[in-house]
Image 1 (tube, rainbow, N blue to C red):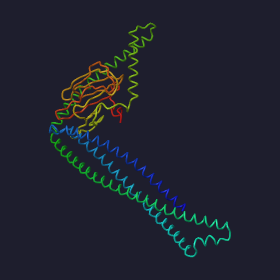
Image 2 (cartoon, one colour; image 1 turned 180 degrees about the horizontal axis):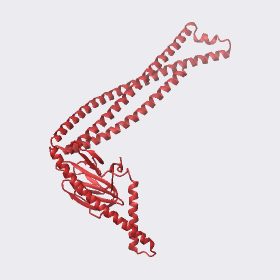
Image 3 (cartoon, rainbow, N blue to C red; image 1 turned 90 degrees about the horizontal axis):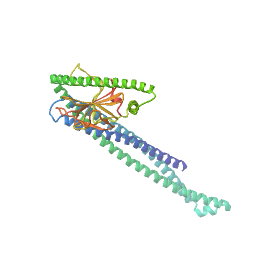
Image 4 (cartoon, rainbow, N blue to C red; image 1 turned 90 degrees about the vertical axis):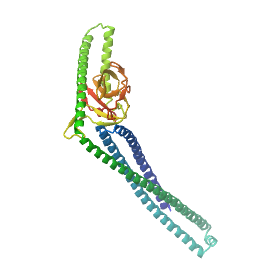
Length: 413
């Protein structure tokens, strides 16, 4: 009887621990799926905007590529959920089998007890059994034995009922899991069909774009020209800022050599020290900066092949973030606006200084800041401009002095 209790408690503990572990894993998977569905919703809106002009574009292709990537991530998550449910079902079936074996064993033990009782009562009644004792002590012992035997039978019956109750609940839980699995299988089939449709749409778009090679090369040349003008302007401004900073540092060294300092000179020294502190703060926030706008990275940092034009390599000194039309663009850190310049076909660029670091935001309209204005983190600089093809894309760059760095290594994950 004691072994039956221990077995029942052990199985109960297994059921509880498996349930908790599975629930945590399922919750995590479902949370990740919800986050991905939100990203898909945003990308779908961006993709819809790229098709409003009814003109094939690289922006539409990049949005499609991102949408396909997100769809594959979604399907991977659904597959992981199905695998987890399969594991749950397998473990539940093992528990059910163990519980069924326990019920059968308990029933056998109970039947043996009943049989023994019936066999004993057939030969001699209880009173005869009690009063045939050779002594009073023996009579008391027989009475206790009969009480314990009756209690044991009652406990055995209760144990059977408890195990059967757990077994019934476990069977129901397994049926619920199987139903959940079937729903996920149906969802997986639906998402798989959608992925196939997206890939077909992408292939059709690529073929159409390949036929427009001349237009794409012309647009690429125009973009390169505008970017080159911007980078020349950035290089010139950064050089001037570096020269000014070096001159200020020299002047500060000379100021420190003097005993008497004027109030204005002291203030200039404080401003220079604040500039140094700003640089240090910028570096400390690596991997923590907020994104300048919502959306997805449509073109990464560094060298990469053109998505359509074969053999053509693109150099990007920042990242491109494709987003929704009219989306706000915000400064990623405290600083001072040192330049605002407009470039036909791309939009306005805002250059912000953060000590020895600089951030560039290109592709703006409705700019809300002015040159020499000091700004705070998350200050709205303007809105993303939409191209003639309905593409809203921010070109974002970070420089350490005159050296471009990969923004994705600085922005929070």
